[in-house]
Amino acid sequence: MAQLILTAASTAARAVGQSGLGQALASSAASTIANFAASTATSLIFGPRKRRVEGPRLESFQVQASTEGAPILRIFGRARIAGQVIWAARFKETISEEVEGGKANRTGTQTTTVSYIYSISLAIALCEGEIGRVGRVWADGKPLDLTSINFRVYQGTSGQTPDPVIEAVEGSENAPAFRDTAYIVFEDLELTAFGNRIPQFSFEVERPLQADDGSALKPR
Image 1 (cartoon, helix red, strand yellow):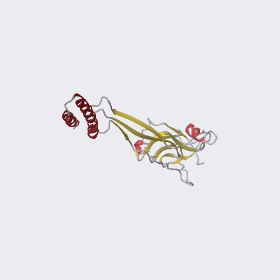
Image 2 (image 1 turned 90 degrees about the horizontal axis):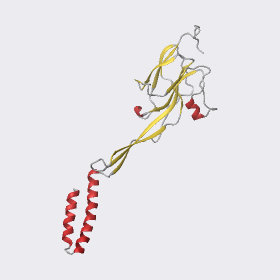
Image 3 (image 1 turned 30 degrees about the vertical axis):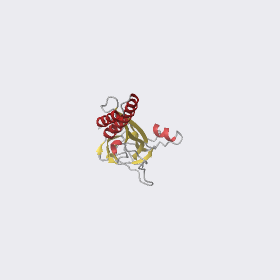
Image 4 (image 1 turned 120 degrees about the horizontal axis):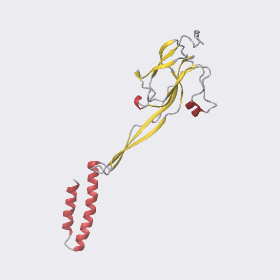
């Protein structure tokens, strides 16, 4: 299409006049018109030379919280439990830009794709008392691979200290240690795989029936 417009403009230039000045003016005007027409035609066919495509962005974010007055579980042996969110920071938005095309592209177009990645730090209470360990973890009913996730498990001892992330957000004087409560902290958990929301977690928790000294554990 651009070539057709350029040819038509050149033909019009030759018809304007035969004098040297007339030919120069006509050629200059025709060249300007042809370049504009070619640029417009290319833009219509291939789109603008620089395009910016933005992915979905959250306007607000809801965090599931613990229910006031809800009981804290007591378990012995091994159990699969859901837990409750007892603390959460504000969600973090990370902007990622990917540029494609440019001079190496045949059409010269350049596309910038902007993606928004969301993550959050949160603590989930598991049960009352000291536990042995947390085994498998599920998110929305599917096994969660913890190898690439930054998390910490607090076993629910009476002397456990506040988590460093909670301490950094709330301040050292206001950060709770949740003593005598076993809980898990996820730090900067990326939410892309869960539709940019906190998934429904469940945990395999093991609590020994005996203490290290061989005495039987009793409910607190």
